[in-house]
Length: 151
Image (tube, rainbow, N blue to C red; front, side, top):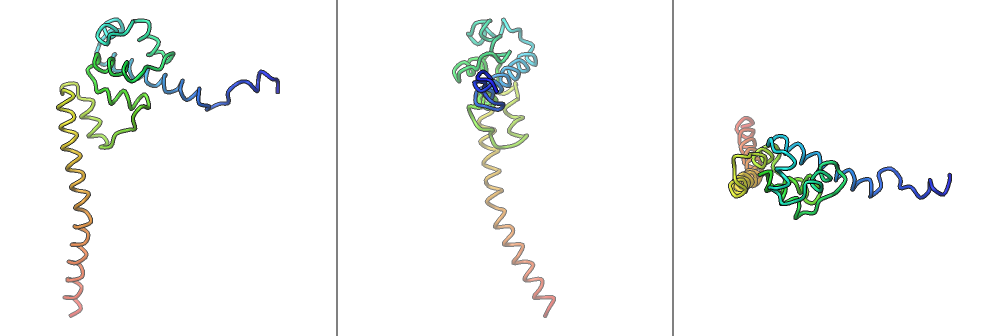
């Protein structure tokens, strides 16, 4: 192995992971821009970032800061949280497909999305808390039935 080979980062190293994240977020932004039928130039104006910089983000050459992602999200009229998750800044939110659908809905404001998500999560928590109680109640009913049958 030559000295130059040893100096090369190994596959899957930290620099490669950063490049993958930058590429993923860039592709996601490009898809969202395409879905919104907005040109690169239009988005750069809406987001307040330069056209070349936005192009570099979409191509995965640059990894944008959280602040830039927020500006891009505003320009795309999507949740900044969705971009933060794609960029690896935030963990994937809970809620599954329902939460994803609410976050992706372009007809709702960010405030409306948050209220819906809060209500949905409160129902999920309430149902999760009720499950142990329902299981205990079912077990008690089964025991009563068994004692009637054996009597």
